Amino acid sequence: MASAQTRLIRFEDLKDFCRRAYEAAGVLAGEAAIVAELLARADLRGVASHGVMRLPIYIERLEKDYVRKKCQLTTLRQKGATAFLQAHGSMGHVVSQRAMRLAMELAQTHGIGWVTVKDSGHFGVTGLFPMMALEEDLIGYVCSNSAPMMAPFGGKSRIMGNNPLSYAFPADQRLPVVVDFSCTVVASGRLILARKKGESIPLGWAVDKDGHPTSDPFAGYEGGGSLAPVGRHKGYGLALAHEILSAVLGGGKWTQSIKSLYEKDDSGIQGTCHSFLALDPDCFVGRAEFKQAMDQYIETVKDSGTAEGVAEIFLPGEIEARTEERCLVQGVPLAEATAQDLEALAVRLGLRLRFA
Ligand SMILES: NC(=O)c1ccc[n+]([C@@H]2O[C@H](COP(=O)([O-])OP(=O)(O)OC[C@H]3O[C@@H](n4cnc5c(N)ncnc54)[C@H](O)[C@@H]3O)[C@@H](O)[C@H]2O)c1
Image (cartoon, rainbow, N blue to C red):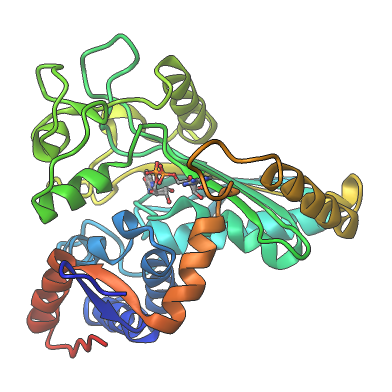
């Protein structure tokens, strides 16, 4: 339901608006449709920090030629179950959709497929790519590096990204399990969203540029601050592993050489690197058996008894799947600030934007 601070829009209308915005910025229809689906689906699943809130900056970067309008993906190496691709600064969403598809094709042939991409760009919600593997009852995994927003554990310079990861596991009657998060306590988009809504953030999410804990979302990120790693040294260690498995493995950009979406970028290449894995359960217990065992595993976890005051144990991905089902019927709630940004974009591009 829409609240005082949100406006509802039908999923199809939101997707259609995104597609037309990309086309107006010079992106080919097929590629515009891929990004539009991914962006609108992020909001549909309740991941507002990485959905259409970013549409104005994605379009601005295309208009400024910071990002390629037509995706170019070159195979640098292909051996057995692996492929190594160069993305030449193309749109991260399109690159990642194609790279995940290739990992799945490799897994269908070899049982496992691993694709590493260099010189890509921001791809939004990590989980939407390993979720593609679910269509074929494969297991999907993606890790990536990202623009700097946190200091190394014990360090003071904001040089590292929050380098997200996501796993997607198929189930039979149950919802798939989709683990999808970054290595900071919250993603930077949550601070941007809080700043736009005029809200403060809990202490523990970020420190300001002088290293002091802050409840000001601007000071904690856009104002030069640093996001806190999840689980202290453990989140820091995971962030390192994801950057090594993507950027160091692919000889791409890492740490502070990656451009933020929000900075001037004459290089034309934001530089994010990603790795995509697809794994076939047929090489182990079998696809059908794996999915049935997943159902039993999920039930074991869900039925293990809730803590006091908690109504239900959720599996990762469950809340998003329920949100998706509900918002397909009721409409997608957009924060008022995001709705206004989209309206301004619609006026600038000469497009029609219709809320529910
Ligand atoms: N493109 C990028 O560079 C980039 C960088 C950072 C984050 N992101 C994306 O931003 C999004 C948000 O990231 P985040 O780090 O803020 O994640 P988050 O803290 O919102 O955690 C999300 C994960 O936790 C699960 N979850 C949430 N509540 C749960 C509960 N009660 N019980 C069980 N599981 C629960 C969700 O299903 C999901 O798997 C993700 O989609 C991520 O991929 C992208």
